[in-house]
Every structure is written in C-alpha cells, then in structure tokens.
Length: 223
Length: 307
Image (cartoon, rainbow over all chains, first blue to last red; front, side, top):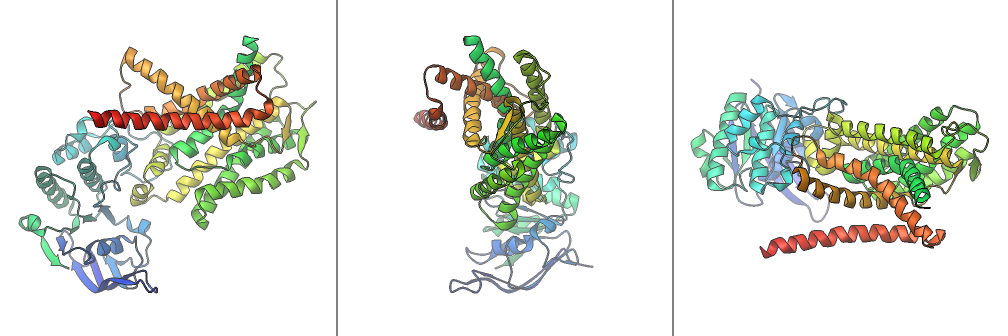
C-alpha cells in the first residue's frame, strides 16, 4: 500500500548557490502511513517548518523526492498540491481573511468553480455549525462577525476548522496551537484527532512540545 | 443659479460614477492601486468616438469602448502577475502606452461628435438625459452589489484581503486579478465613452487626472456614507445579517461621492476658483480626506488606549 507521505533523501538549501547558503534539510527521509499522526519535534532552526513547506511546495528543494498518496509530486506547483493537502500555520494572520466575516471565510473552503457568478451560501450549513460547535469556540453563533476582530488564537482555531472543512487526505499543522490558552489548546487537540479519525486524515504536526501529543496515539520524530 | 449648479453636478456625477465603481473594485476590493485608469478612461472615449464617427450605433460604440478598457486592465494585471512588475509601475506603464494607442485609435488628438448621433441625441432636456443616466448607474449599482454576493465576487474580495490564504485553497489568484482589473477598467472605459458621447467630443487628454478625480469622489462619498450610517444606526440600529454590507456601502459611496465631488467643484468654480486650479483643489481634497481618516483612526486608538 502506498504511504500518505514518502520523502526520499530530501535536501533543502536556502539561498542556494550563494555565499549565504544555509542547509536546512540534509538528505532527510520520512514515511508516514495513511491515517497516521506524526509529530515532528526538535529545537529552533532544525528544519521542521522547512519540511512542511517543502511538502506543501512553497519553497524550492535542491534534491530528493516527495511522494504523496503514491504520486510523485516533487515537480508539482504548490497550487496543484492543494488538491491533496491542507495547511495550518503558526502565524495566526495567514490562514483566514480578516476583512471577511466568519461565514464568508467558511465559504472560501469550497473553492471548486470559484468563478461562477452565482450567489454563495449566505448561511452556514447545519453540518458546518455542528462541526464548529465541536471545536467549542462559540464562533458558530456569530457568523456575521468580521474575522479581523477575533483574537489571534480564535483565528488560528478557525483556520483549523476551515482546514477540516475541505476534507483533504493530508493536513500539515505547523505549531497550530501556538496562540491558544491551555484550556482551548486541549479542546482543540481533541477536536483535531476526532476529526482526523472521522475523515481518515493523515496528520503531520510540527510541535515544540511533543509531550502534549504523546497520549493522542501519535508517532514522534525527532529532528 | 443653485438649480443649475445641482443639475450640472448631478449629470457629471452620473457620467463619472461608473469610473468610481471601477476604482472601488481595484483599490478597495482587490487592493490593487491601479493607475491604468487615466489611460483606460480615454481609451473608452476614443474607441467610442472613433466608432461613432465611422457610423456605428451609439450603444455598440459604448460597449466596444468598455471592452477595450477591459483589455487595458487585463494588460496591467498580466504585467504584474506574469512579468513581476510592481502594481504601481504596471499601471503607469499601461497608462503611458495607452497615450500613444489612444492617438492611434483616434488618428488625431480629438474627435468632434457634432452632427453625429450619440446615445444622448434623442434627449431634448437635461432631465431626460439625467433620468437615463440614473437608470444606467442604478442598474450597474445593483449588478455590482449582486456581484459581491456571488462566488466570483467573494473570491475577488478574499484575494484583495489575504491572497496567500486564497492560494492555499487551490485558487489561481492570477485569474482573479485579471478578471477584477478587467472589470474595473471596463467600467472606467464605459464612463469615458459616456462622457465623450455626452460632451460631444473625445480628446486624448480627457483622462488626465481621472484617478485622482475618482479617488476624491470615493473618499468624499465614503465620509458621507459613514455619516449616513451613523445616523442610520441611531435611528434603526446596526445593520445585521450575513450580507456584505461594507461592500454595498462602498458602491453606494461611489455613486454618492461622484455627485458630491462635482457639486463641490461647481460651487468652487462659482466662488471664483480658476478652472486651471481645479487639479490643485482636487489633489488637496484627496489629501485632506485621507489625512482626516488617518487622524481620526489615530485619535480613536489613543482614546481606546486611555480606557
């Protein structure tokens, strides 16, 4: 059976071919099975986020191969790779549109035929409300609120909910609980693993604190 | 005298309103400071006038002008997206190129439409003409507001808001930008065509400073619409619901601002402002409008910080 992610001898060098070249990943290999949750841990500057970016295709690689779901995606553009994966960022500002309402942001997760001049769903569906309620943020009760007026933690949590809406086979989570308080973090981790279990999503998580995730049936890879 | 001033301002406002709608799309929704406008406005007028003088139907001439404007907008988007030229410079380059192209289109520096049948030839009175323009602008306003609640409109707004996020959803934002600037400049060119047909001539310099004129109109309109909103909130409470009210407000502000801008201009001219100082006055209006918003935002932050 093909693995969800297979990375073969991946090397990433920032500022390649210049005197300021920095090798972020040096012949790294990793295999993640379908439905597995793998936590990548390690100190600052060990290349954890670089690995996620390389998989998402947002940075160039020097050598190696990246296979997703049995397909060699090494030469795929970042946009094409979004068919197979979703990503939640450490930076709370990246994953949502601040000038749009919560409800409008959720409509963006359905990006098929975005160019159609037909009205979008003006209301959240019952299923969407139910899923948001599970995350326990209370955001489902105020769909017209501008996302820009939410806190960083709320925005991060929302980006996670939106990532699950797309039902991608693979989710890359980069320090996705960095802006959350302990209570919310705990609840959102539960939500993450519950949703991932239900959708059979493969999770690749970067975390400084893998101990928080040990109990949740994960495999930890040290970087 | 007063009625004449209001009448003139109303007509000018209605003629220029589509251009202000276009600027709302590029500057406000798509977050693209598009300076193509000066060129595409003239292009609309030039194409319209050339086709009219060649004996084509007025409506067809107007629509071909708008289509030419759309191409100009798409050209700017392509320079920015495919060749990596900055947003401002892309617009300036296309504007510059259009100056020569407009001369080619017209074959001379200006075309008089005297004796040619235009859209407005059949109107014997100003009221009839204004009524017709009001219907055109009203229909455009409704179409744009509808556009804001379509999937295409939502992704256009989202691209202006956080392009990175929209790309993450697998959307090719280059296409969004192309479509947005195309539509924006089609509206601007439509306005250019209307102006040429209404005033009875097209001139190669008719678009000079349109970007500032439309921005001035927009800023004035926004300030006034804010005021109306504040009064509305006092009377009826806050507009709630899931519709994108801020976007509707922008388009409404564009229409209102176009009229108010020309009203202010007409009053200034009446008070003795020299015609040649008009651009100076407009520039100062834009500076004052933006500065007032900036200061108000800063003082609100200060007030909040004291709490």
